[in-house]
Amino acid sequence: MSDADRDRPTDGPIRLLVVDDQYLVRSGLATLLRAAPGMEVVGEAADGSEAVELAARIRPDVVLMDIRMPGLTGIQATERILAEAVDPAPRVLVLTTFDLDEYVYGALRAGASGFLLKDAGPERLLAAITAVHGGDALFAPAVTRRLVEAFTRMTDTAPGTERDAGPPPALTTLTGREAEVLRLVARGLSNAEAADRLFISEATVKTHLNRTMTKLGLTSRAQAVVVAYETGLVTPGSAGGG
Image 1 (tube, rainbow, N blue to C red):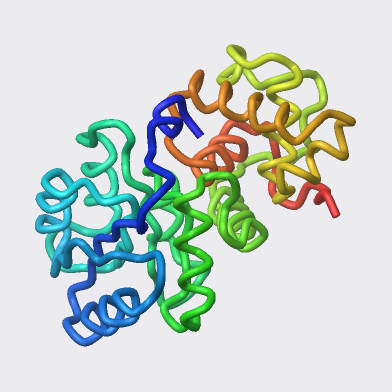
Image 2 (tube, rainbow, N blue to C red):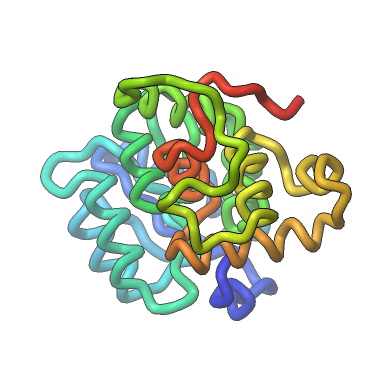
């Protein structure tokens, strides 16, 4: 979504780094991905520290990140990989055993692009990798929104109605239209759905979202959803965009 993404290679296979502390899980994922067209496993890491080292050295396109690992966790590894990355930074797809997981929320907050349950089938895994690599849409945005709502609701002291008077103070660098786009994306709408709602083109939605992420220093669409809730632009339980 950032300017650096325009330099991200679009031809050739998607280069993958697989991170999991369980050997059978890691090797099974790697074997599956090596057999898939358009995918290339360029590294495997058994813990967060090894993942950080390999990501810096081999510069994968996408990192499949186990979230709960001894030592350096998936959240900490995600933060370090993205902070130290040379543009274009890799996408991080978090793997977890259940969706409403505070560790996943932390990873999205740190800049992971999305998450996937470990019991997802091969087709869903490949679709998630492709979607995350493309950067245009979150994989399962409704589930991500539900996760973010669950954990932001825990810190709400005075739930109220959603703001309509422009961006919250933390988002004052955004134009009114950029804030509108961010609000709809945080509710789980796709770019096309947001465009239809605002009577603008899908390309214009992408432009507004790109500018928003650049202004706020964000690395993923998922991180933008987290920011929208944490600043109060969108409140847990506010009307969806169906």
